[in-house]
Image (cartoon, rainbow, N blue to C red):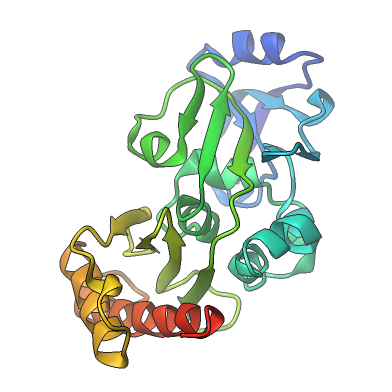
Length: 265
């Protein structure tokens, strides 16, 4: 059971940051997973009063507050039009609507959980995160950073419309993914973001130009094998490393074929 000794709802991000510098403090997001932990938190910091629950749009970017819920993402027309429905697909299997109304994007991204569908999907886009102290950094860089006491305030997606497909394999409909896969064509190159390995999501870029050759089922298969070869997989209760490697090849090949169909090739 989660035990909280002091509950604080700061009125400014500066106040929240100062409170979070203590080792005994912890930021609360949607509490989707933390509530199931057996931990004692001295000071729980709730960011609900900081206005971070909005999706704002400029000419070049979508600026998503860290407290935006998964349900807001699922229903946001602009983001789903931009990603050809990939954002919606990445969240629709997560537990149920009630849970998605509580769980937040910031909680999933900052946690960098291996099972995170959101990390897998957003890693394939032109995504940056905004940290209160460190400022803006690319999501790919952020995924490799050590966890610290900084506060994630926004996730920023550039409005660059490029084809992408999100797929996942689950043992049951609302379980954690066995493998999560997002394939996109970014800056003219095919890329694949693979999560739930069961390690955190990692990006593989087609540096060899495999998908630039004459497109065919065999080429898609070759790229799928290239992606799997450049990743390492592990075993847990949901699947073995060998099974994850096999499923990765299946999903990457399938996603590539769907993107080519989308482009009319």
